Length: 420
Image 1 (cartoon, rainbow, N blue to C red):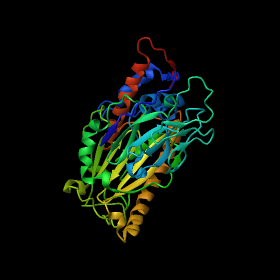
Image 2: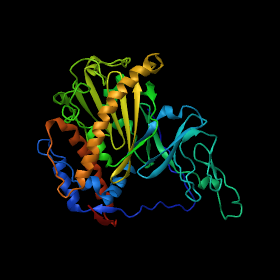
Image 3: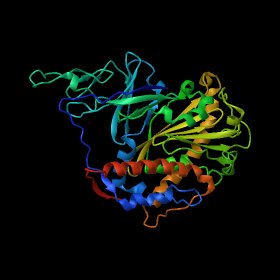
Image 4: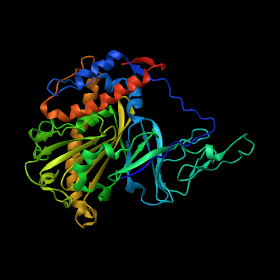
């Protein structure tokens, strides 16, 4: 893990002023109380948390502007000059490896007229805004601005791209818009310990080809990834029966932590998603016997979810695009060197055909759940004991919702109320 605190680039006379945030009512915030109590007594979050545009704006302030967000994998920018772009909660981002080997994350919004300076991915010496040819280095510093010599008090050092904090965890690139954010790794000790046998930083990465766009709230997808209760129902059949719901386990976690875990025992050693139900690709060499007799699900909200088997890890990077829409990258990690084996592609495709069938079932459910959440009859449901990880997620969310509400309604602060 490496951390760099990349503070935002200062610009002349620049004052960052937050747009007015439509706050939920106090009664709505208070209604969360029934969603973070003991599992046997708890109920689900209010449906408006998944459908209301005003609540989504509040959620951006509560989560996305201050939490660590997964942007991609370190090996996506292997060489100096490599870069990729993404958007998280509406913010355009470019991630690049500098000539010094440092990974930089920056706003891709030009400091001149807000044109995006980069699209897609590739390798470059610099970022040249196509609109007026302002040029930026791989670290975001402004290196050229044509015909600005008559502009009063223009200083290039004050007009770079806004830089974000960057931290690498297990080969994943996390960014934070909040330059004062505490480091990520110390709040992931439980998850890091559980995953150490996979050595994800050195795993072979089969990078996602293109993100998908989906018509549901990001939490619907995250809760599905987080849910073992449906495994023996929705996914019943030979592709998934080796992971029965009644073998689910939920380690305790602290809502202040950055992530949490759930385990699901398997009916046999080295179980995997393929027609044989047994790992066909090389097993991650550092796994313990306990690891090889269960599946591990690691969740680092609001953007990363991991599904871990003996021979394969599926990672999902979730990015909201609105209250009821999201994008998602789905990538795969395998044991170091496994992808070089002559029979790898055949075995990998066998695994992915099975995994894709399961994911398609999940996505159909996600779409219908989102429709149901819009209904005036949408419930605040009750939980099974096999949904223990949902309470962990609720507590993670609710702590941040409450803290943000208190911060935005504190002494001498005025907020616009009206959402939810």
